[in-house]
Image (cartoon, rainbow, N blue to C red; front, side, top):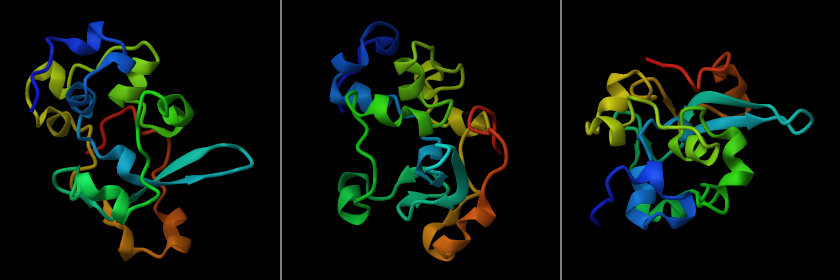
Length: 156
């Protein structure tokens, strides 16, 4: 892995990050990998407990990240260019969204703590409480909507 510049997220614009720095922004929460319901008439987005079929529910990481688009064609390719179009449905705690909005990283983010498990320790991940996508028929996903605006708060 390439060497990361010290505290790059505080000084380097998103468009100027190296690929390694861009990837390092992900806190490993798994929130973005939850299936969502978006209502066309209102634009409202609701998260469900149903995870993408590639999400490992214990590590909150993609089980085949390098090949994810072959398995999940609808998986979103997050780039500095696509971010403005999709930030509205990203979790409130997402580093990409926060930095795009001119905010700072949360104090539990692994880049801030130096601990790759700090997201889980802070209760900010979906670790251990998701359901696999194939276990629930899509017509029933609304039965698994997570109530309220939980994406900015601890989950576990």
